Image (cartoon, rainbow, N blue to C red; front, side, top):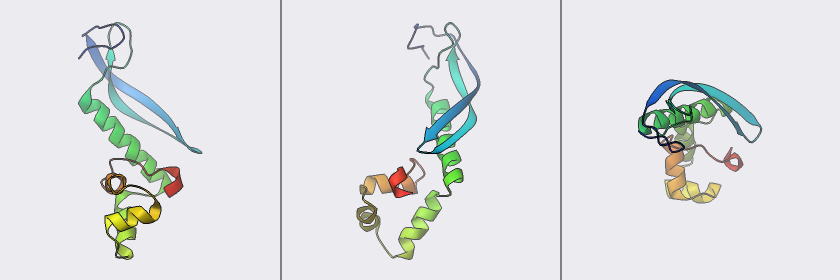
Length: 111
């Protein structure tokens, strides 16, 4: 892995505190991230970055109380397909699928 800032390939991993604000909701969590040994900037690491994204999504869904299982239950309680439900809430079917799979967070307008 190589630093995009200085080009250094010597890196290290440490705990990193993430702070986010989505609408009026502030949240934070700690995850392992890779840093450049030379300039201490974040270095892209697919595995660590994906884990951090998953943790960001799960932390946010715990706070707002909307998780993928509840989205699916709500849709199914009205006996709707993903395509029908997506049209009702005003998003693309692909977007709804990503919500139901826990790969993304619903926009504030859907909460």
